[in-house]
Image 1: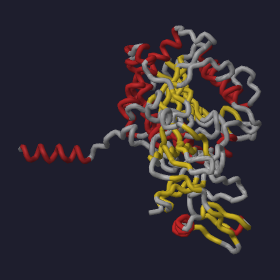
Image 2 (image 1 turned 135 degrees about the vertical axis):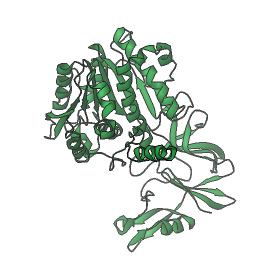
Image 3 (image 1 turned 30 degrees about the horizontal axis):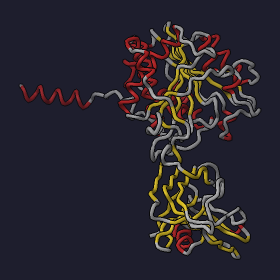
Image 4 (image 1 turned 135 degrees about the horizontal axis):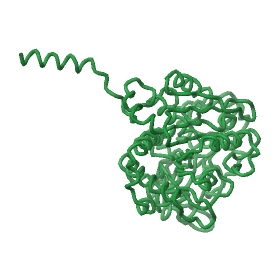
Length: 451
């Protein structure tokens, strides 16, 4: 009899579909640096097949691309989420697609049923599809949509404001990306997630709705700290008259800004994407249960403010420079922005900044490289490039069109200004020597060991 019961239990267990976790719900195809409207359109249409989801085109961008909303639930508490106002801020859009996949999964039907009569959720992903298409902050008119909340001179801004005015959200989730160089407090870890309850006036006063937004963020902060301890920061709370978050805060909406940032060895911000989707579910659960009301504003104020430029991509500490005027030691900071990264800063850097890659160069000397003259076609593989570096070549002259770069390392034309000593804003292509031998090559923010 006991054997029969055990066999029956195992049979039931084998036929049970376990609910997927939000942590594991990552839709395919969005782990990449840029996300375009074509990437999310299939996910929007797939979500719309669910009976609880209403997909609606709410307008078009300046260049005629669709702006959509998805409405889920019929409850009296209204929650609005919007992403990618800045076209090159992709992380939250990917996270929203994950969240939609979680919401509409059959195994999560009971979870959806718990809240859809208490909450109405409105999601507007990719507010700036034109900017997304070319990966720029601004829209096709060259306007920053998040500085258009008052004048409403853009179609996209008008659409977002009209949606908010019609929906009248109780909570607004303003979803953005921040640059990779913010720290969570002075000399803290990278600010992978930053939060803010935006000010509604110059005095940055705290009224009921802003105070409750602070409470809500304090509640969410616990989840961030559990997932990525030390990587939570608070965004600058200066009042920004023209911004949507501040304007919605003026309207009495509990506005929660979430900025996605960098994490070590995570170029496509998949850690921030995961934390975002977990926070979206946590937000819905907390609003349903009202659990967020037990959080204290003091917990919000305890979150460290972001520190600007706290991180650099490559930090070379205490390298010796030999010059005709005398030898000296400096730090060199390089950020990997653009096709040809340049030296961002020289001097005492390590006392206030940290490097995603750092090198103690106290036993090394700075050395400018030689010019490789192109007189025939050359394909640079990693092995070929490294061979040239070992020979002391760090830049190319002649017909640069004869060069094909098959590596991820940057290429520098020697017509750029190369000097015998490090120069601010100069191309970041040089060597670090030990005992007269090139030990490292520096190409942009790449530190290449030549041993």
